Image (cartoon, rainbow, N blue to C red; front, side, top):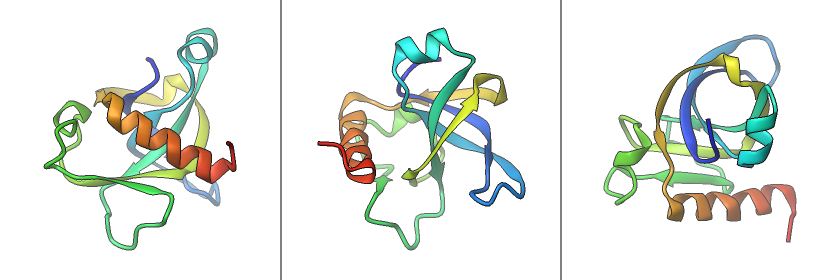
Length: 115
């Protein structure tokens, strides 16, 4: 597992009442992910209605979309960040390309008020 990988993982609901297997993107550094049992993820949703300003829309017509392994247009929910055990990942889907990771970086800086 490395930064930019998209995996299916058991992702908790924000109220911790339950969890659901869904796609998520690894945003932690490769050094952190390699040295830890955990990784830091952002949730990806295929429900594209009602996007938030911090969401990043992944369109099927985007040149980098095919490499993600996603089946349909989705939202990367950059405000839905979780540190989870890598063991919760059930399968590898694909990878976010460099342009997409750059856009996600911008959104994360916005969410976390980083300069």
